[in-house]
Each structure stands twice: as structure tokens, then as C-alpha cells.
Image (cartoon, rainbow, N blue to C red; front, side, top):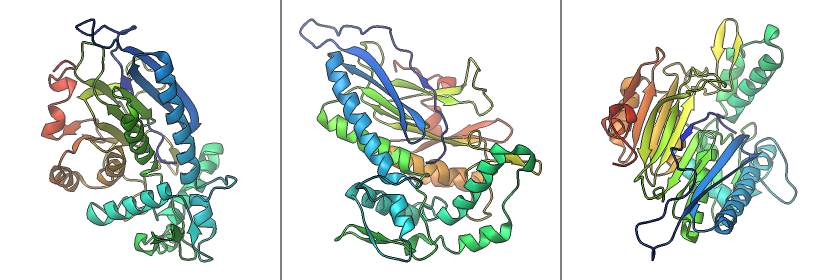
Length: 359
């Protein structure tokens, strides 16, 4: 799965829950738990509920749904009784594959956003990303012999990346690829999963919490600690080391929204004196070089995930113009020299521009 980047959650929470203003109103407590067995990343769940049992019920539902979606979106592994992305790829040029509705919807949404918003985020780029994944893994395992893929190989692979050739039959829930094609949903899968599961548990009554899957954070409602009106979510410094005490460049304050980042600071290797990360520009077939990181704030975590790649792979003027054209989308760009640039709406919710959790 894509970009195991980390958005640090700036909790700023009390160690215990605060009572609400009157005895007749519910008392909410803060709970947290996490799991590591989906999407190759740590997923953290934070919630305010009346009892620990209530929180644990929501946590178990969230964990199970993430396991289900991880299996569906997996491009590497088979699962008994499940047709997933790998099943589709294995049957390219052979036959349509019947898959679960959750996978159909992911593919259709990806095609829709690719057509309406931007072509750089392309789930059909699998033949190209497969080559890069191979070279990256070899370069990490054996740095002295690390290599860059041959441009000719990448160009031939790019001939098999037309997203319009991904044939979805909604009536029969099947997906068919032409021979040589393959899907890689890493540019959207985590954010899409976070949004889907957040909506499901919110409908069940989970009214205050955070689901954070790697670089994909979705907040539900506001913190029910009796103090704050908004959650504080940190934006990671691309240059921060694992042991750094302060990993944040800034903090944004949000309710009922998502924060998603893409950056060059994880899943990288060096070859021929070049720093080579995992976000591949479909035009150059090389890692994007415009930014260190891009962070999106939007209502929908799946859309934010899509945009974090799309805007990362565009020159700043074009990237800014696209961001400004989208309602409810705010962006921070970390430029190669470390400069932060942001939309006006993003500045209004950033700590560095005076925003707080109690506004």
C-alpha cells in the first residue's frame, strides 16, 4: 500500500475525561487503542465515549473493517475466499473477476476523480510502480548496488497504464484488465478506507473520535473534553528523525474533516547519487521533485488522499490553482528548501497563524 507517511496527532488531551456542564448530561471519557496489521502502518483510534466497553465495541468494528478492506485492496497477497486487487491483476487478459462492492466502489471512485480532477493519480499505473518497487526494495536491501530503472523499461510499462481500459461491470460486480495491465491503489486506498469506516461507525453512534491510519487522519465531531472545540492535528516535518522530540512543522485545528499528507521522506532509497522516493510522476516516470511534502485538509479522507498525490506531482502554480478551484479543500506545500506555502483557508486553521483548539 501507498506512502506509509506519518501525520503526528497532536493530542493535547487531558489524561482523564472532563464532566460536561450539568449533571444531567452524559459524562464522556477518553480512550485510545491501536493496531499494526493493516495497510503496513500503525492505525490509532481515539474516542470519547461514556464507557470503555462502548469504545472497545467501536474499536473492534473499526479493526475488523480495516482487516477486510486491507485484504480487498492488497496487491501482493492471496486470501482464501476473497477476490482482491491481486486476483484482478493475476487475471489480466484472461477473464473478468467478480469482486466485493467495496472494491468496485473504490475503482469507480478512482476513475471518476482521475477524469474530473486530475490524471496524475492513476490506479492503473501498476506496471510502472511494479518496476520501481522492485528496484527500491533491491536498493534498500543492497545499497552499494542500488540502481535506477531503465527509462526504456518504464516507457514500455507506461503503455499499459490507461485507466479507461479498466473495465468495470457494475451489474455483475466484475473487473477486467487487458493483458499486461495491473492495478496499484496505494494512492487512494488508505484514505478511502479511513473515510468509509469513519462514516460507518459514525452512523452507529460514534460521535467523537479520531481514526489515524499512517498519513491519513479523519476526525469525527469535536473532542468531548468540555474544553476544546476542535482537534489539533500535527503536520510532520519531512526532516524530522524517528527520535526527534518535535516532529511537527505546524498544527491544524479541525472538526469533521480529514488531514492527509504525502511526502518524499519515507519509502526511499539512493542510487547514482539520487534520492529516489515512491511517488512516481506519470509524465516523467520518475519520483516527483516539486515538494518535500503536501498536506490536504478536506471533508473526505479518500479525496484528500487522492489530492495529496495529485498536487504533489504538479508545479506549484498549477497545484495552487487546482487547490483553489476545489470547494472545501485546503493545502500546505513544503517546498524543497523547507518553505511552507498554504492556501488562505489553511492559514486560518494553522497554529502558526494564530488558530487554537478552542476557537
